[in-house]
Image 1 (cartoon, rainbow, N blue to C red):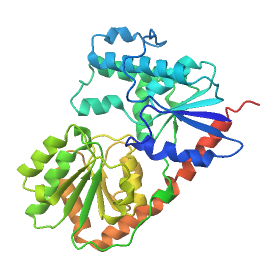
Image 2: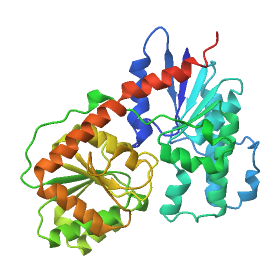
Image 3: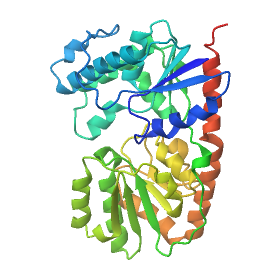
Length: 375
């Protein structure tokens, strides 16, 4: 069976897609399967000129928006690149971004399309202050979900929470399948270690949606209470300068290390103690599963798909979003009680191994793929 995994970003980009899809290829290396990856290179800009028409809505209603215009141009570029680079047919296309799915179906209308929605671009843009809730960009982006529903043979997402979010924008929400991201267990090797000072780590893109301003305020409270710690922030983004300034303003810059973007944080994540990310929204939160597989104690917010991974007090701690005091108190619990921290981490590791392994995700996907195999 010839499979095309259609991505938007190159596979080395951070995020749940890059944590799973490139590592799936070796699981499909057999005489029965032939899988290829495809994406739009960053250098491709303003190449496409094909007229864009959607079946379920008129996108030109939003054409005055620069954000919408950029999205449409990127879609045209993806169409241009797909027509240029893909000549041979596939038995099935599995797309992992709306642009990739819509372009693939435009070019190969007779090939079955499975579409996985990994996250909400519009929610992140709203939280990051780029667009307004209910504005033209928001309405354009959520309209794409119904278009994808019509064009794909199967829609999937990564958490029950996000499937519920999508239900407002599609005609048949009961048909949305849920397959959480899977992670290659061989990449994550817990390492026995003893840190005299608790080491906190977070890994994310530095944007307001991730709530790192709340984390820095919580860490400032920890310092006021006399707790020693080091906070390691791995990732980069437009919010970095503001976060560095906030760390200085709060008097915790010496306790905070900004690494910038790192390609494989899982290689040294096991040497830390506590993973914390107070996101304002998460469709799934792949990095929590990665931290759990590294045997770290987890602290997150009770939003989106995070509580599907963390059962409060059992395999991690959950706090409300936008609450630095509650976050400080949760961190205080795992900083001051190493045995409690270890128990949470071990339970999180057990759950992640059983529910978020790449083997589990691949087996579920194989069942779906085979249901579209030509007899």
